[in-house]
Image (cartoon, one colour):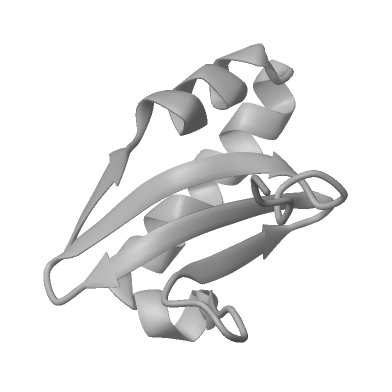
Length: 82
């Protein structure tokens, strides 16, 4: 299983403090081994979420790939364009 970060996700991650970045990367390394154990399907959507404190990661899961589309605070991450 492989994990790739989208541009938006990478930019958000770089803005976080180093400790928080390390915590997120550690959780992603764990999720890489068994994504369905850590990622939860979003209701009414085709993508998945991973919770790390108040940070949420939105990703697409494929058989051999986890594509991280977005990382953000839980209050902002689920907002969709109208």
